[in-house]
Structures are given as C-alpha cells and as structure tokens.
Image (cartoon, rainbow, N blue to C red; front, top):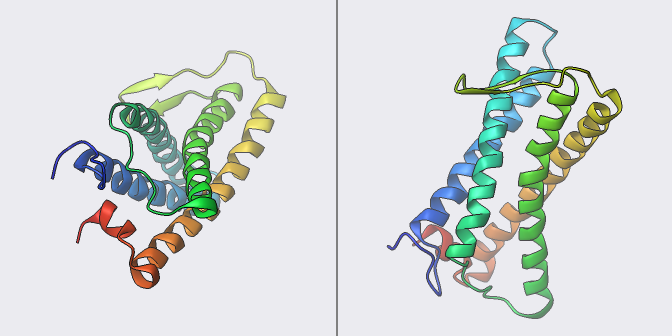
Length: 178
C-alpha cells in the first residue's frame, strides 16, 4: 500500500493520522472526564498536564493533517447528491472541531495566566496579566466544542459501521483495508 492517497483508497499516512488521532482523542476525553471528577490536588494537576500536552499534540497533528491533504487529496466520496454533501459537511466539522477545541483550551490557559507545559519538551507561557473575560469565553467554547466533537464522532462511527455492515459499499475498506 502506498503512503499517499490514491484515487480509490486512503494511503498509509492518512490511515495513521486517522487511527492515531482517534486514539488520542479517546485518551484526552478520558483524561478530562476523570480529572474533572477529582478534587484540586497534585493528581488532578498531573492529569491536566497530560490533557494539555495531548491537546497541543492533537492541534499540531490536525494542522499537519490538513496540510497533508493538500499534498495528497482524499479520494472522492463514493456517495452522490445529498449524502455526499453530508459527508463533506461532517468532515469539515470534524476538522474545524479538531483545531478549535485545543486552540480554545490553549487560550483558556494562557489568558488565565497559566503556562502550558507540553510533555516537558517546551512551555507555552501564560500571559502576565489575566484576561478573565477571554479565559471564560474560551472555557465555554472549549466545553461546547468538546460536546460537539463527541457527538460528531459518534455519528462518524455510526456512519462507518453503517457502510461496513449495512450498505457494504466499500467505504470502510477504503480506510481500513479488507
């Protein structure tokens, strides 16, 4: 299988992006969900360190993935008409949320005056003076984007399973092989 996308199948690079980012999104949601249930303390701080690190990684991967699709365009949809428009809209929404959610999380932290340590590789510094209204707005947007992303992912998985189990139209195989 080639690394680049072909006319009728996704290449290795797109498949790695797809599966890798799906796993990381699952991890980051689980981290946030568990961390939110904890009282303030070192364990909660440690979990949010990992949550923020993975978030910055996902933001970078989403941007690289968008660039990759400029060099290796995705195969055209196998469906037509309204269904093709829904596929396009769904993918655009997924990409927008994959960029917006971590970007809003970053804004929330830095506007709140908090540094963001990224895997202890580098630090994105928090602002010297807090901008409360911006941090609050970013927090609300981050939570809304998270809920929307989870909903769109559920629909995405349901559509994939529909194509695999009901329609049997080759959509699943284009991404995962036989």
